[in-house]
Amino acid sequence: MAYARFCAPAYHVGVALFLIGLAASLPEARAQAVREAAPTPTDSALAAVVDRQADRGPGVPTSMFGTYVRRGELLIYPFFEYYRANRYEYKPSDFGATGDLDHHGKLRTSELLLFGSYGITDNVAVEWEAAGVRASLAKAPDDPSLLAARTTEAGLGDVEGQIRWRWKRETDHRPELFSYAEMVIPHHRDRPLTGTGGVELKFGTGMIRGFAHGTLTVRGAVEYAADSTSHFDYGEYAVEYLKRLGPHWRVFVAVEGKQDEASAIVEAQLHLTPNVFLRLNSGQGLTKKSTNWAPEVGVVFSLGRH
Image (cartoon, rainbow, N blue to C red; front, side, top):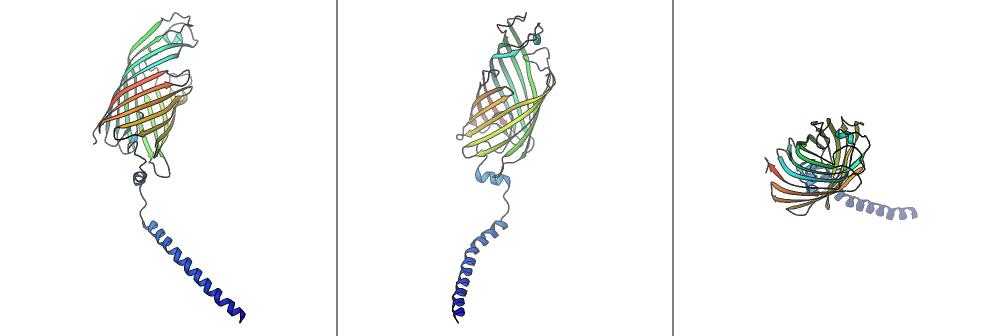
């Protein structure tokens, strides 16, 4: 009898706990069923929900800082660049004079360039660039060779093309991943300041991650230069930050380098119309061998897609 009196309350308590637990689990079960029945969101839907593309839009990244191209869109970018390098490394033998020791002269370069990019698909783009250049090298004070005190060259500069491929779109769980390949066409091997002595190839990859406070890009490359003593070497690397400040302004900051050279870069982009924007860019050398100062100004025109 004592056992029965004990079991009855225990039984009722157990039943009550079971019913409470069942009632508590029903909302979660219904929520889980709804989640399982709901369609899995696409990458673009996820990006729209978190607005990870707010700074850059849906296009493929080009080699121009903070600039992206969409499918069916043609970008045309005429621009001007100036370089000032106070420790430009050269050998007198590069210019036909006697001497194979390295010296450091002062180089001044002005370039007028034309850049173009076209979005073939949502994930593949091509681009090209050609330059007209004028360069002047002041001979180093410690250079005893018969090289002229100042050497000046002018004419065609770099002529290059790239193909760029976005092979993973950004989601809430992973960054955007992209790769690119570049070729520089050799020409005027007798012009060491402005010509290209041999074919140059570059292969790189990078990732992009959008945040509420801005967009980060990290990239790196390896390169091949036919006229270099070491054909393969590390290419450019960069850490980049892009932020849209409103409907008209975007700002860009980066550290970019190559081997023992590194520069800090800042840029402002003013969007004059939906299809035209102004780029104002300045690079400052961070290491001894870097270009000391490299400003750039130009206007980007978007054609073929509105």
